[in-house]
Image (cartoon, rainbow, N blue to C red):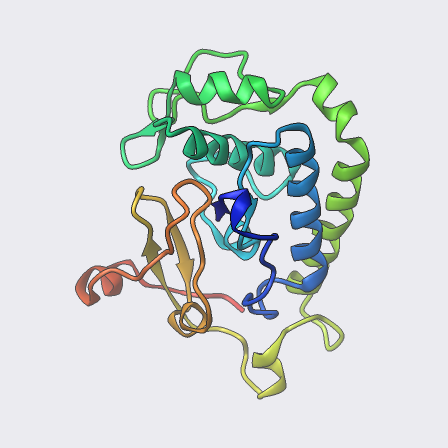
Length: 220
């Protein structure tokens, strides 16, 4: 997801509107750009949709500005060539914490046995600094939640609804080179790559036996 700032502007093309409404994608990109304004070495955000679908178990929490700043820590670590996680990306080490503190995140407790210093939180000063951006992103997230969770004739269902489908499907685990994973419908992944925010590599579906074992039925 992050990439070198010298390679061009933030890329917003290629996401599937059934999972990433354009307003939310734009607000994610705008929030990321605001973080870059304070931390110019942060690589560009190439694929906002990967944040929306990505499992949050290793990062502790759903999508929010705090989560976005967490991902920015991984982006800066990648730009510096710093290995900030271990155990297939699950354990966040003290190098992660050091960069997190630079970006205005804090971890007041002892490291978690399995996730380390993953559960960082915004400091009051950071919350004040980014207040307008946080409020805009929260509004976009609320609109996204209403559009995708409200099961009414007026709700946003995307292409599946237009073709008479219930919108469900079989989601399988897709992995990246650093061990992070997302649950995705294979046909959606085939439309455009989903990039990892930590290593910048695309998520891919493993060999068929593993993918089949990990398959779950999507509720839609």
